[in-house]
Length: 290
Image (cartoon, rainbow, N blue to C red; front, top):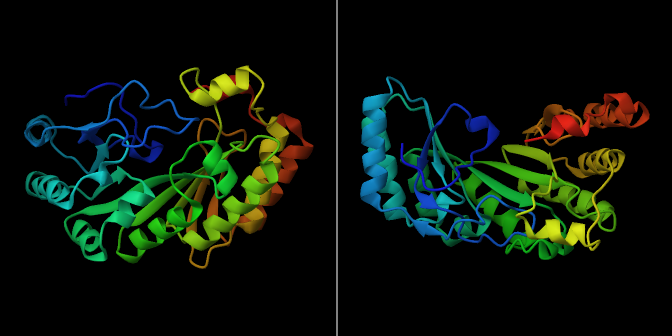
């Protein structure tokens, strides 16, 4: 496979074929993110994408999953996405699912009919970074999407048969906005009714603009105990109407959690409280390296 620059994928796509359909992220302005800062956003030529699929068919006996990179393949027009999805179906009849990153505003720009069409042609799930439910935090990190858009975008995808996996970042509001970040993120999870939700914990890379704010004292990182306190508060409010698979087992997290919302909220909150009392249960910083 031919790739331009560093390639990123969700942890759950570790064994997927990674097909690069765009280069970089169409927004690429989030202050905490370092993933695509070295890339200028553009679409890969369709002939290159299709050639990579042909190469993969010759190279691999079986491809069960395919992930469309880079930052938000959902921004492509349906005509382009359908060309890719149809070629995948033709070349890889054994493929069980096709997924991609996307932004809520990408989903909102498409009609219900267009989203249904994508699902019918094989797009099964979209990964979205909501990051926070707090309007103040979203503005601070230059997310480029409102809380209302994030909720509406996820609900629209789910309503049209495309599952969503939504990520929130613990510690993103710093100490000053810790409570608001936790409560509003929990409320957003309850309203979104996503299929999957995950928590990551903020880790700053020197390339990320927020790193400079931290170095110069304009932003403060939460202590491990505060991260757990914030996560417990998020879970108090994160009680969606339909069952939602929850994971907080990323390398960045101080404590690993997994369960279903809202059934397992209280159990996971109790686990966080035990770790707050017994600091030996909290992951050492050394083991949080990505």
